[in-house]
Image 1 (cartoon, rainbow over the protein chains, first blue to last red):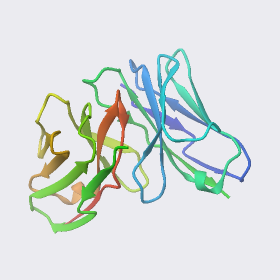
Image 2: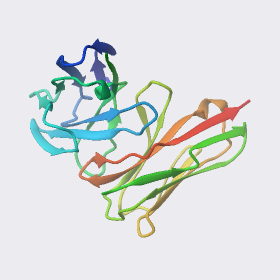
Image 3: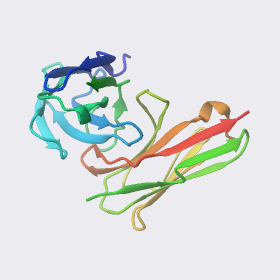
Image 4: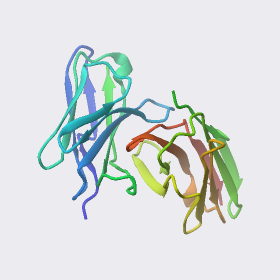
Length: 113
Length: 111
C-alpha cells in the first residue's frame, strides 16, 4: 500500500510569485488536510477537503486555496508569495471517520526569497 | 481558541530510561487526540490515536493516556533507545479530523 506522497520535495520561489503543491492521498482515503509548519513550530491547519469539497479552513488568507480531484489527490495553491510563507507544507490523508488516524506525507519545503 | 502546550520542550536522557512526555490543551471539547513523531526536516509519523471514548492506548513500548476533563494527555516511552530520538507532537482534534499542534518535545536518547 502506497503512503501519502507529495511533490515537489523542495521549491524555491521569489516573493510575489505563485506556487502549486501536490499531494497524493493513500489508497482508499477520501479526506485530505493541509498544514503549514514554520521552522521550530508545530504544524498549523490550513484547510481540509472531503470528497472534493472544502470541509473547514484555518486562519489563512484567501491567497491560500486548494482543490481535491475525483481520485482524492489534492493541490495547494499559494498566490502572491510572501517571505513568511517559507515553511514545510504537509499533507495528511485519512479514510474519514473519527476512528481513523491521519497519515502525513513527507512534506514540501518551500523557500521564498 | 484551542492552545496546546507540551512539557518539557526538550529532554536528553541515557538509553534505557523510561520517559514521560506531557501535553495539555485548553479546550476539553475535543474529538480525539493523536501523538506523532517527527524526525528533523521530515513529515509526521503517527504513533497513537486515542479516541474520545478511550482513556488509554498502547503500541509496543508506547502508552498514551487521555484525560479530557483536565485537558491532559501523557505519552509514556518505556526502555528508551537512540532510535527514539525525534520531536514528539501531540494534536487534539478540535473538529472532525482537524488537528491543533503544540511545538513538541525534542527528545535525545544517548547510547
